[in-house]
Amino acid sequence: MPDHHIAFVALGANLDDPVRQVESAMNELAALAGTRLLGRSGLYASAPSGYADQPDYVNAVAKLDTSLSPRELLDQLLEIERQHGRERTFRNSPRTLDLDILLYDDLELDESGLHVPHPRMHERAFVLLPLAEIDPDAVLPGRGPVVDALAGVVRNSVRLLAPRTSR
Image (tube, rainbow, N blue to C red; front, side, top):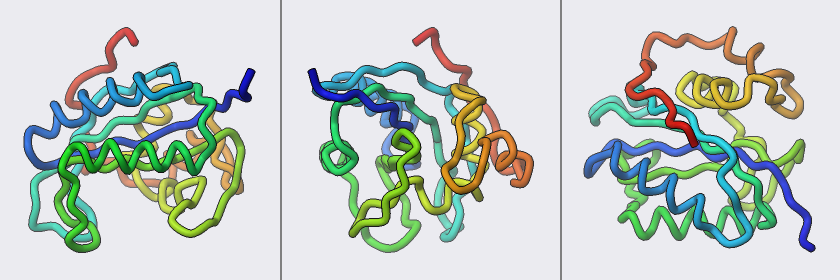
């Protein structure tokens, strides 16, 4: 039997019906081979960062039990993004879907195209709020508890759109 790991994935979208994009991607994450959706946050709206001239984002976090390696999981996330029409035109550009591995067990990886934990997650309320919602005991390797990181970020640009479902 393959090893199983706990991974947290951030979902975000601000084009082409972002709520539908995030909900659809959540279902696609649950359907990945060797993977089970353990939890999902509510949907959050957040102001764009980096490039301001774009619509607000819809964000969420999924908690997965997976037998996929970090690289295999990343490859699957990139394929889901591609199927949703993701285009990488410039840094922080509007997008139909963005999927990022936030945490993978307590692993710390710094490989080409794969950085775990996500290098800027501790600075982003739109990631920390939904992560703390589904796992308030989560720990950011090298940084400590998610609730401590959340205490250090400005939250006024993030608001709850829809509470989490029973899943």
